Length: 352
Image 1 (cartoon, rainbow, N blue to C red):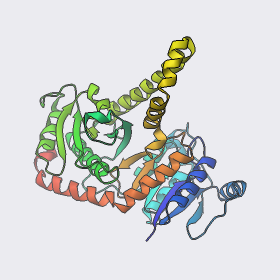
Image 2: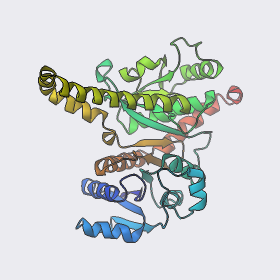
Image 3: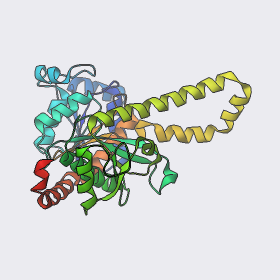
Image 4: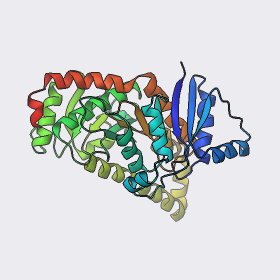
């Protein structure tokens, strides 16, 4: 049977045009894919006409949603005042099993909150996690040139148990969706020793060290993140969000420095010209559109949060990731891992 992906047509800075273009690309790439576009039906149909594209009702359907949550709106206030918002309607489709996964480039806080309000959490999991995929130095180990960090903003502060659950969620997602076999999992800490970081991190370290379903390599420090020593970096949302924004800032500074060097001296300009192919590869590696969005893990259905500035390419890649996640039944397998771990540590985990 074809995988059915719900797509929030109205979410994002470039919605709905780039969202619809991305959907068209995804449908062309995958014969076993159906899409449910959620948003203003008249506007969606108008864009298809402008693009001179026909809507094939066997593969693409439209579910009307009258309202939209703006990118700068307060998520809680907007969702309360806009019950027919496209992101809420999309989540309801997911909850009613009318879609296998969801993609949205909309307001991040609204996507997370709408999921929390409408989707059941995997039994045994206390908190869901927003993950982020980021580029790393591939030569440190035979990886794919990227890694995953969670949480990066959904759960600001965590218990040991929640960090452990993040490790299981991230490990399975990376191994089955991103094709990194036996991914290395690490805790982000202020030192490598297992006694570092306070009671929460020490307990999380102990439980992960004993876990049989994941490859835990211990603590890593901030300097290790871009090296790619770990394929999955586990941290609480406050720290993860700060790290993620720092990595984005470093990328922007590097680009600005390149532009500055190009303008300053002829010899620098010549040098950059020789490095053109390498610079292009670096641009691809650091381009968020290549990674297909950030998964929100812990719900019984998977939600992929695409970048707010997503273009058609980014949306198409996000749909591809959502499709792969549904095919691999990621949520069910995470549930099995969490159930086994909680059963083994039922008594002592009550304290963390």
